[in-house]
Amino acid sequence: MISTADFRNGLTILLEREVYQILEFQHVKPGKGGAFVRTRLRQLRTGKVLERTFRAGEKMDQAVLDRKPLEFLYSNGDEYVFMDTETFEQMSLSEKVIGEQAIYLKENIPVTIIFHEEDIIGIELPNTVELKVAETDPGLKGDTATGGTKPARVETGATVTVPLFINEGDVIRVDTRSGEYLERISG
Picture 1 (cartoon, one colour):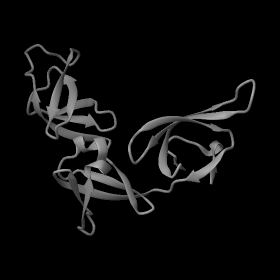
Picture 2 (tube, rainbow, N blue to C red):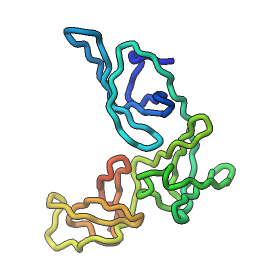
Picture 3 (tube, rainbow, N blue to C red):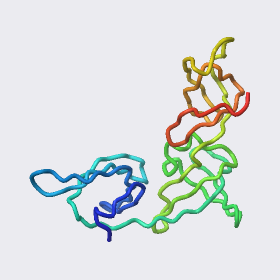
Picture 4 (tube, rainbow, N blue to C red):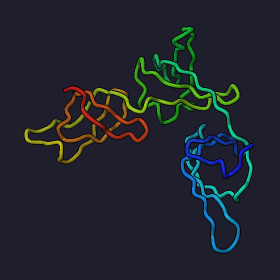
């Protein structure tokens, strides 16, 4: 059991039989009434973010998560196949478990599967991935790094907003947490 005094960003808790990760928290001590803790939580199974207020000192169970590194092999419809790099065992996960992160999966990318009491509740991608631009409007002579932006579709199907100088065939680095363009790797 942990109390609200133990809260920190990234901590996982059990709330109404679901696993939540604390994104932000703030201890509030008003002039009248008791102190409380205002939090933003992300449900790990669905990715939904909610705000919740707890009384100061309220107790709850901490969720203990297990992580296992795997490598993404391929997708087959709405099933995604991963391989354990130590035992070479393969595991299939549904698109429902992967969620919105599926748009950054490309072959041979390392991922971490997150377990809670033998249940797979999600995956963690590397913070950045390198993806090839499959489709975008052509860059024009004179477009600079400080200019405007345009949408580009990358090899996995994700759409990323990129600077005007990015062309089809360029390899770019994308932040998987925010979906933002970081830099051009080659082109």
